[in-house]
Length: 190
Image (cartoon, rainbow, N blue to C red; front, side):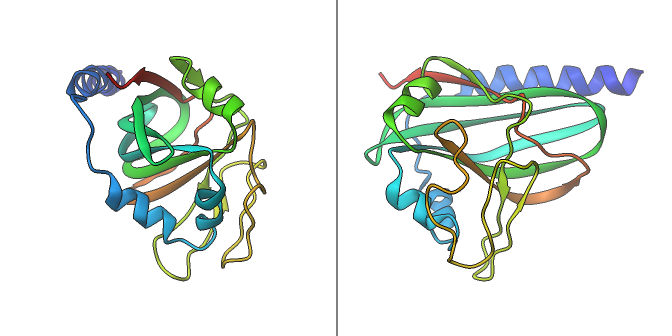
């Protein structure tokens, strides 16, 4: 039980520190270019209305877990605001990992929904897991996303509610990874 309490306390501390850490626009071009260079992701970027980028999200847990990260939201290639992602999960999970995440936004209605201040994916939401190699492989954590290996995946396939999420693992090993239940806070750029 002490371990569960420690995990929750660490997550709360990390989340509060990350919320305070966002001071201004950061150069996230490395992460953006990594995703744009993946054949099944590139079509989404070329037709995107907007997109949100998190260069690093940390996830960990043992029974009780959580994830947290900070990122930026882009419209027309310019930063319009900042976003913090967080979640707390309960259930079968063990380990920790860091990953990058991009949400590609299909249209203005979805952008407006995401930037209302607080947005949450429902439990059925899924992400496409990609790798940065030329022979990228794709998988899903659910049933609503569809992207295949190679460059044949077209933009528009896989949008759910006007958004498509891609994740790229950086390191670690985690038994569970999902975006269902993730909460996104948005703060417009000053």
